[in-house]
Length: 323
Ligand SMILES: Nc1ncnc2c1ncn2[C@@H]1O[C@H](COP(=O)(O)OP(=O)(O)O)[C@@H](O)[C@H]1O
Ligand SMILES: [Mg+2]
Ligand SMILES: [Zn+2]
Image 1: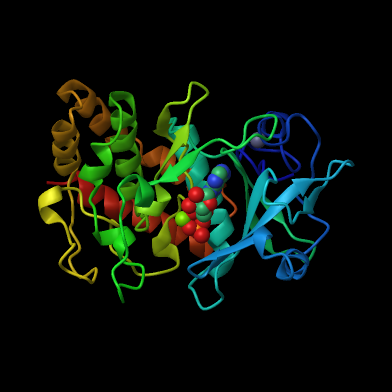
Image 2 (image 1 turned 120 degrees about the horizontal axis):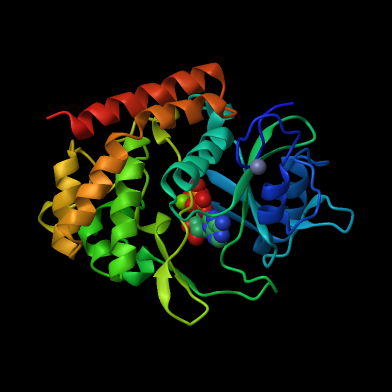
């Protein structure tokens, strides 16, 4: 018996019943897949609509088979997205699915941040993969409108900027100003969470609005949360907090700002979040470290991955809270 491959609860074989509910609408589904990443790729080669590559990270679509199995699916309307491990040139590449799974689970369980539902699965050959249930589909499979902040803010690539525009053409203040008051509070919490967990990749494409049942565009569940420091050396934060620090003119990510909790407080204030609420957020994250470290130990990371993950949380906690 290991921990649940969804919520990390102890002594579970595969997914616990509450995770089966959330991920698979009550069916018993094994986290051991009967196919390999290559089977998705082979099928998809002739079917470009079923496959996407953004940057170096490939993704596939997964559907459900009648006998409660997950199956490769070339239909772009399918319910799940699957990500295999990172490029093998990256550090601890084999840990990347467990890293994303842990970070998403931490946001959900310890901080009640709304996140895409996810689990950790294994291909037939034993390789780990990250599985997420799509939030841009309703229960009947109808498409819900989604817009990432590249499109919300009309960010446009410059010639030869190599995709850097998603990092440096706007700031978190610009994003925060586009949100409603409730989402603004959520947004500050999401930013502090990502800072603490070493996510240096929260750029404009990793933040989205999603159509609500009433047709409003609200902050979507969080996705693509991971401690990027396990695999690459990137800055502590992907974009600047404040408008006046915009890197627009500066095409490279050379300036890395070492923010303190007071800076997140200041950002919250600027976009209109009340002082009392910001103080509560500060306190919440200040005292959360021990529980974060405990959850890392329950995760499916390798021992080296756990060690590095905890080291980053410790460092970023000091950076954030020690004056
Ligand atoms: N659970 C999900 N439901 C719906 N859309 C998702 C979900 N997870 C990711 N996406 C969409 O797919 C895109 C790529 O996924 P992401 O996890 O960001 O992968 P990558 O590591 O390649 O950036 C995201 O920008 C988002 O628009
Ligand atoms: Mg992404
Ligand atoms: Zn579970």
